[in-house]
Image (cartoon, rainbow, N blue to C red; front, side):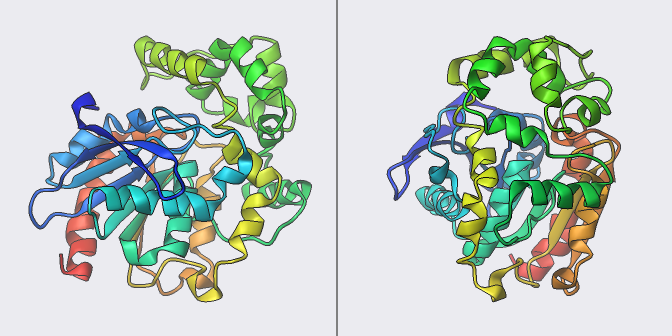
Length: 336
């Protein structure tokens, strides 16, 4: 990512956001890129240039808790309605009216709630690995784990409990090389055994277990990631999980009116599933988009033969497929 294209803005609630912005060519749409955990806007470094080469504008914030953006450690600062307002404020800083909103991992949740709270700011939506995140009633986290397990067929989100522990930053900092190897393992099934079950991730870190590195990241990529999170810590990023396990997110979602429970039917949707993602499983994503609320939507589904990090491993394929979708579906529908 070109460092000269980064800017900063202060949102309406007084939070500083750092973001990357490359303007669109005339009559071309701008793409909002929202990253997830544990990342920064740098995660788009493969994909963003490919999209810019097609004439699209790109705006990619360091999401709250990451990179050059402020890092509050109170989970209440991360409720979806506030994150949505922050994103709109970032768009307003560049006088952007409507965008194509794209999210990976927790960025997909941010895009989901942007669709709920500010659908007028988006002409289309794309979800990578994680699908649209439905609004659920507040429930005990154990019940949520059971629901997710039933959907995926195996444990998926057990590590959220560790990320909600008071000592999460101390443990992860002390064993950061182990965690880095777990993020990008050569064998994607590592996530199913070493991360997904309750208690597995913390024990793996305490054992300083390491996995061989996946081919789509270099030793230098991992070094830069370690340097970034050793400097910034994990207390703020894990608030994206704490807001879930404490039910703050679910309670905040109850203000969304029923008629805005899903994106508008006139907004096309692109879902990129990761075939070897054992946490955000393809089937879980497909099941969301197969529900009645999405029966009237125009949804393009693509599956890539990679793990969770398809935006790194399959950026060329994704850029090509996104381009076709934007040109053949989004632009004709929105009369850009």
